[in-house]
Length: 291
Image (cartoon, one colour):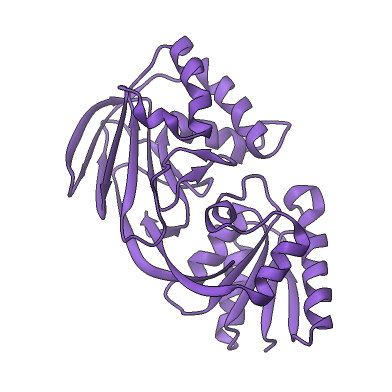
């Protein structure tokens, strides 16, 4: 096996994923690193290609793509000890943002070469690992619109447009959220449970979250009138929304979510499962290459 396998999503960022993968291979070979490029062709390929390379003995990987393919690769690498590097090329790039990995291609490649390996936590819900944030309610519905490519834009712009569309029809949902912090019960606009603080292309829904503290942060927002939601929404980009009286923040290791009707849970921008569900932190489950 080569020293490093590059897994690239050729359609990420309008083709930037393929170009970035080719640039990584070219640069690393110039530096004497044995490297192989593998391109995904559809959902699930990231996990499959990673598992194949792991079985063959590869211990270092790089993903050129967005949070969706990173989600697949990280899940396949969980608890393996193999290292994951990231060259951000997708819509959101939220894990790369949380780890301080630059968007600039040359700088991101340099992190692969000279960065340090560190272990971070992962979340787990519905039997699947996630890297960033699991959400339900309003933001899961907006995330579903982005996932199904209902927005003509990418990144934060796609999420903002999905929020505005969802705002017209969404109504709050009653839930019960229980953990080592106690019990929250009542109607919500949204609930976000995060291993890191960013989602939706840079929104700081959980500004105090850290991916190496052995805990999951929780943000619950009460149902809001539409005009108030529109007024408050920009505060999520800075994380200042957590000071609002309608926002509740909690922290725990294991969280149980129940609701009278099934609600979708999205994690890393991917549909994972419906309630009822158990969300938990898996400490030091993933080795990453970061600055």
